[in-house]
Length: 171
Image 1 (cartoon, rainbow, N blue to C red):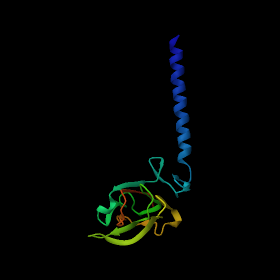
Image 2 (image 1 turned 90 degrees about the vertical axis):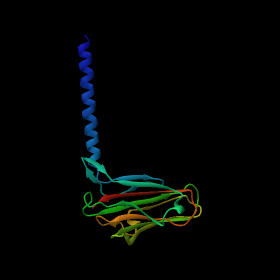
Image 3 (image 1 turned 180 degrees about the horizontal axis):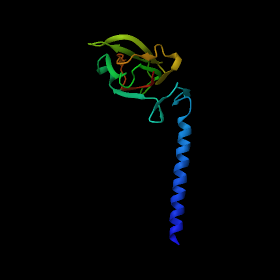
Image 4 (image 1 turned 30 degrees about the vertical axis):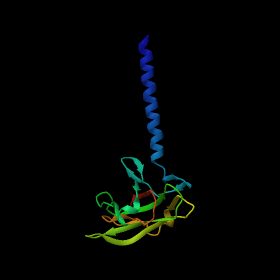
């Protein structure tokens, strides 16, 4: 009498797995990626597809005592093996521990030794803000060529820490 119960449970498990895979497959076929930030949901551009899932890589870094580090620090590289045509940045933000006027420069660097090519975006908070974000079309120079670096230009402002976030996709 127990065998039909075990078989029924197995069949239900398989049906649930198939259903969840079908639902997951529908999500993979969406045509846009949405990021949830403090300002609400925002369109983040076409998705990259890796292994059948939608991915928009995100880099996030918290820097403690940022005014005690170099003026510019290397953050990440648009590796040509992963991004042969470079990347497009669709979102940048900064978060501070409290309200302060603060501007973080996001820059594209290249060469050996590296030097600044151009400013991707300056993200600024006002004196009464602790969060700022810049979305898609408002970013000054969204593309970073393959094998170039994204650097952070750290201002000489006394804050305990800053978190900087960047969302991008391969071109």
